[in-house]
Amino acid sequence: MNSKKFNNFLKIINLYELKTIPRNSSNNYYDEKDKIFYERRETTAEHVYSCLRLADYFLTTEPEFIDLDKLKVYEILLYHDDIEIITRDIGISQRKSRINKENQELEALPILYKKIPLELNKKLIMLDNEYREKHTQTSKFASGIDKMDALVHEIQYPNDWSPKGFNERTVREWFEPTFKYSSTFMNYFEKLVQQLDNNGYFHINPSGKKLEY
Image 1 (cartoon, rainbow, N blue to C red):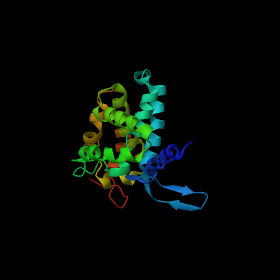
Image 2 (image 1 turned 90 degrees about the vertical axis):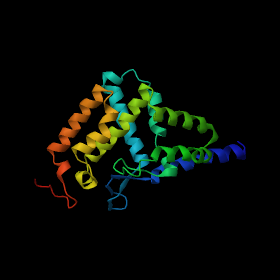
Image 3 (image 1 turned 30 degrees about the vertical axis):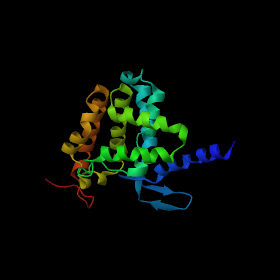
Image 4 (image 1 turned 135 degrees about the vertical axis):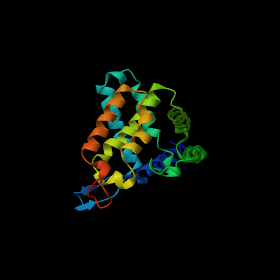
């Protein structure tokens, strides 16, 4: 292997930066090696991983999705947030910051393009474009998984809901449009909203106590 090819290969490390991009959601855990409990944010790479697991569940268990191109779904999800290496994460509740989110990401694509291995450039552009346009069933499904993962992940963290602006109205406003194309997604979404409401997630103040009405 010549040095040019090897140096190109080493550009893959730039994609590893996704492991350091913080999201608004929590991801607390006990480090059994250092015996430390970490209260920290979820990273974008962790979100991508859980999206892949969630997608595999739906592709395996739900008849509506059984005929989707699984490899294409996994590839779209693997690449769908890579642009955050440049732009960082803008959470769904950050409404003002999200106004120009897509334009900012499109402007950042050429920067990311130059940072990754040459052989992955066309793949990045193709998958990013398909995910944004959402003209295919695979991209609509991937978008649904992206939103569904945020809801499922945050069931573990009751204090991440109403204190951060999430109530039934905003959850429906911000998430439901992505699920409406699919009766399966809508069924899971309604069950999740019911679970969140029944357990008081929409009625917790910043101190962690339930709000009384």
